[in-house]
Amino acid sequence: MRSLFHPALEDVRPEAILHALSDPTRAAIFARISGAGCVEACTAVSAVGDRVIPKSSLSSHFKVLREAGLIRCERHGVEMRNHSRCAEVEARYPGLLSAIMSAYARTDASAMATP
Picture (cartoon, rainbow, N blue to C red):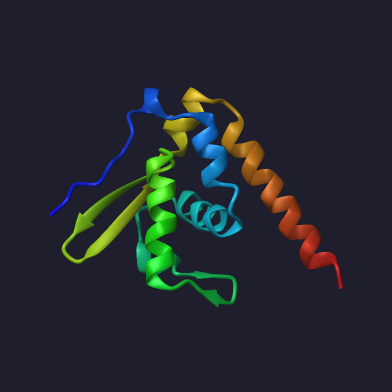
């Protein structure tokens, strides 16, 4: 079985983080994982809002988040478990993740308020 690539913290680049979180679906997945406070299985985040994400798309989203250094994935049998690397990334780039995720939260709130 092929091993998963996880960049070392010193190799995590801000442009990779910005790219990974530029997609609203990936940002929602990341917010769910980072807000859970525990390890999340891929199937636990397979729905964003009322939309179910196909497995092939979900795998692609997880790969982008993992290779950007935002999550760590581990295989447990047939299941993939994901943990947030927020604390590590926050130590390297203070305020970056909170600014991006706050912007998404404001965007989501204004979208819900619009009739």
